[in-house]
Length: 79
Image (cartoon, rainbow, N blue to C red; front, side, top):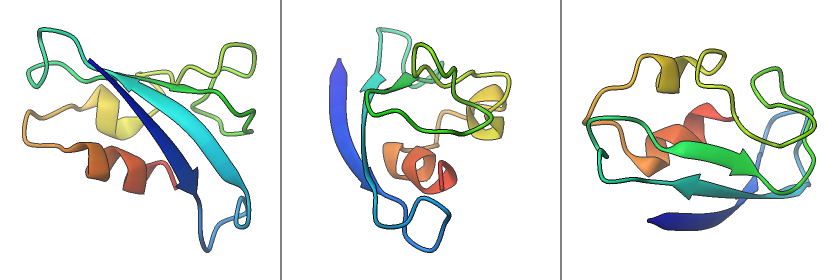
């Protein structure tokens, strides 16, 4: 499954910019976290600057995934 979102990061250094990202869920969701990829260039330590992929190891919520986390939780933590 694929979810496409636009994200405006209010009250951050990215405020006023809109970022597009995709969340990819496979058959193991919600037991395993989705893959997250920015399609808009963004400078964040957890994002690969060449591919836009959020590194699971560098993004705490995905690294410590719990099945009750939601898409909204992920988007809020990306701030």
